[in-house]
Length: 172
Image 1 (cartoon, rainbow, N blue to C red):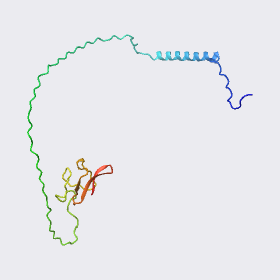
Image 2: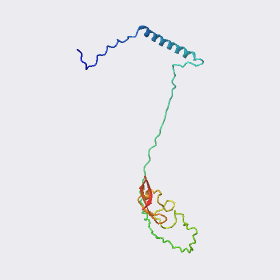
Image 3: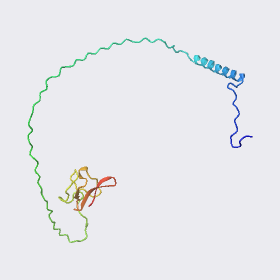
Image 4: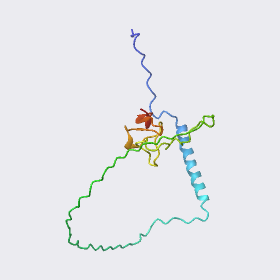
């Protein structure tokens, strides 16, 4: 009795070359016919073309180069003592803003300020931009100003801090 838990044995495969002779002959005849057709078509369109020569005669090339290398000359060095430069002097000046005595009657005219906002009061900014204007909050900082504290044009303290993936001036 056979085991019900094993798979049945598959049938044996047919021996190689099991195709009948008529199919093998027709494949060979079809291949030969395609070869002959390709040869005929290939030679029919050869019109005015010249045949390629199988031998190529190499050209003789002679190259001669002469390089003259000059002798190195003697090296002369002279020792010079460096002169000491004077150190820069630092002068600190304090500018006091003059009080203006406006005698407006308060009639309600324009009421706005006349300053531009970027360089309004002289002497209130300790760090200024390359153009000489005071920084304001939200502007980008220079690399040399990272972490520095200064004041904007109105006198409010601002600090250069890293926020939102950039160094910017923010209110301190």
